[in-house]
Image (cartoon, rainbow, N blue to C red; front, side):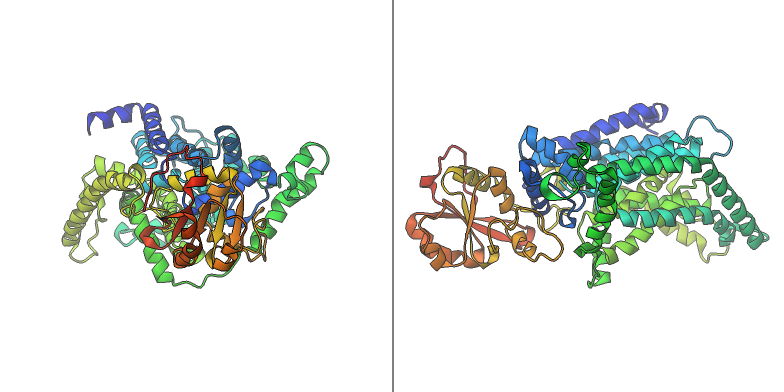
Length: 596
């Protein structure tokens, strides 16, 4: 092993801290430079409405309230910027490598505990994967709830492992706290819960499968499997008995962040958190509203509806995003899984690998779009097995973990030789891919080479548009023109939509411009056609029009001295907007270089 690797093995805590510093650096440098994605703009829009007194209540259209509520004080103190919007997620993603220490094997062994931790080298490898995996880095620089959910779930899992490895009940309570923090992040926390139960079942049953493997050559495999299952079940019962007393307290602790984040705030709901704190509302009613009320809201939302898409297409896209954004994780987890089949030694590997496999099979059914961020939830359970696999690759000859020894497999030596070549190629590809994907996604601007960007990411720099909107504040604000930007009225979007409200689809077409208008505090108005535009007494200095309706608007605006600029709003030229600006009516203080 190289000198840095030996140093990391001797001083794992220092190595994890250094990797955490690297992770924070990768996530915080130039955090606000990328143009706001449509989803970021949507969440930031209603977060800013909340900051300005509109109140806040859980609405599935912007997922859980954790991100908006943590971003709100930053908007108050730092201003409504892309940097402030992304900062909480970036910090959580940057601190993720610290969770590796929770999986580290304790130095002492006590009765009724399980040997399920990682050694020092595997702990450092886990921290390294959490620090530099491209998809995790990119979506840590994004105002989305996916990274907080994955990080909180990983920390909760780490505390659960710590509880089993040390026998200390306080770790069960800590796990409960982070489960409570995960719940108000995003709705697919429900899938995490289902997978966690399945993983526990695999952990109990896996020892019984080992004697049945064909290369184990057990004299009486069925009897050995039965005995192994009984032993495993006994250990599980002992662990449950030891930690059962801590479960009620863990549930109570989990309830605290659930109520804090999911309770309504301001005039948006009843009862509200402020009313309960002031003694004007009962806490039981507030708890019911935050729990039962939240479930009812979710159950009636589009996220709980059926899916009618093509499973093979969605599965293929998600697998592609997983391989592009987290190839080292997939390779390491695969090596660890095959190694575990050959020589079982790490009880965490197979259950967590099974979680990842179930997620890969299940998310194409559950998701409404095959977005790149979904791959984070598939990769999440594979990080720990991947750390085991990469340390095995470094410590042992790679071909020794490629295939299990077996005389029952035909042409075994040929299979092993090709497995060596394939594994060597994957190791080299993983080492090369990480810096390339990081450079193409998180370091350079989001150009068309950014394979991790979703199609609603504007490739153009929209800062000139933002400047014109800011400058329009004192002279009528902005106007949305044409059918593409229709709304029943300009106040319908004061609050996020409730179930049954149909204006959301129209309003989404105004993104991300709606965010820039709200950020500036500018007025917005609407004209449906050229006649309505011509009949207005005064036209605002900034007019947004869809490309297909540009010429109609130009028939009125060109003769009044407006100049037009086209901005691409989606990758691959899927969406665009044409901005008409009357420069003579803007103060011209802000630099607005033209981007045609």
